Each structure stands twice: as C-alpha cells, then as structure tokens.
Image 1 (cartoon, rainbow, N blue to C red):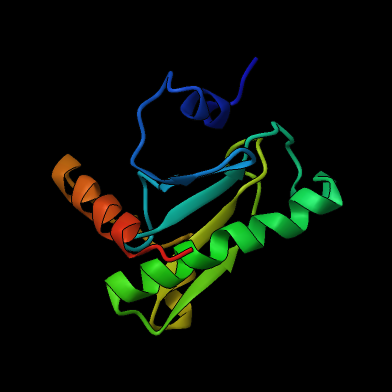
Image 2: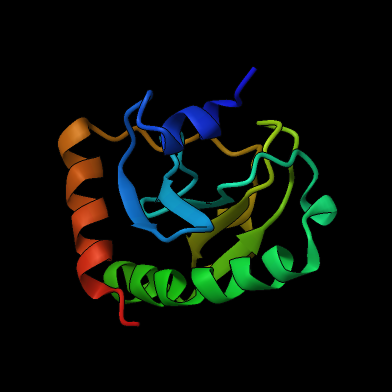
Length: 132
C-alpha cells in the first residue's frame, strides 16, 4: 500500500506544493511547528532515511538548499533547522523548519493552526523566493 506521501506525489491527496523535480517533492507540513515548515521527500518510496541510495541521500540536501534559503528569506528566521525523525510516516523525509531558537524545533510543542488561505499564501511566497 502506498504511503500517504506517495499518494501526495501522485496527486491523490492535495498538498501545498513548494517544489518538485524528477527525484524529489517538497510541500508544506499541514501540522507545522512553525509557519513555513516544509517536508522534502524522495519520490522513491523508501521508509528509512539511511536506507536511501547514496546518490538520493546526498541529492536530497542539494534539492533542499534553495528551498531552505527561500524559507529563511520569507520568514526572516535566524536559521532553517533540518530534522530527520522518520517515525511519523513510513517514507523517508526531511523537515525544514524556520527557527529562532532551539525550542522552535521541539516536536513535543503544540503545532501551529493555520487556515487554508494561510498555507496557500506561505507556499506561494516560498515558491516565489526559490533561486536555482
């Protein structure tokens, strides 16, 4: 059975897409720790992050870099934190989270509540700031 992320890639489940190429897909987390919290996933459905082939493992960060820079530019955060946890969905993924302090990346924190229009605006603003 396809993971929820594979279903998002295929367009079966809607998302707030940030970027896509032939190997990767990035979209806003709908339960964000911070506004702009983005997930980057490989299109290959592989559960464990460090089971990814070496080329995909290294390229996911290269794909993520302009997205992280766009998140930083849009949110005016101090940094964009990167987290790989892998327990939430059985599909390898990277969290890009705008942060101003260590506690901003605490997954035990209450998630932000955003409306559909907020997500649409954030996704558009980040997409417009991506420089390749």
